[in-house]
Length: 146
Image (cartoon, rainbow, N blue to C red; front, side, top):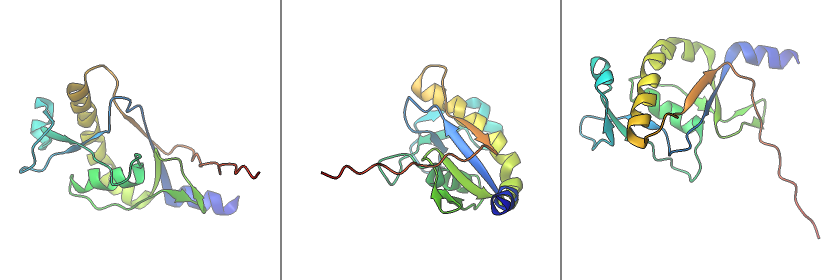
């Protein structure tokens, strides 16, 4: 329990939800063909957006978040496990000190991603992000032995 408390001070668990209309988006590089454009992003250099294409079949926040932050000019490492237990795919862990350095930029950029997501996909839903949430771990799948 004491070790977990130390981890909670050192790390932040981040969670993403509600991307039922496709993968979340990333800020587009200048030479990249974009999926959608939003005027609200213009003052921040975040007008153009592309669809995130994961390297694995399933979405992993631990892969998406560093790419999103890299496109904003930040380097961050995100982990998919905590205390030796694997987190659910829509959660990741980052060092609190790293997160606090780039949090304000993320909180400007991410709502623009939500706007671009709604523009690209229609509807009113878009992926939400929450910080400092309780970790949810993948439960081991039971193996049927016959």
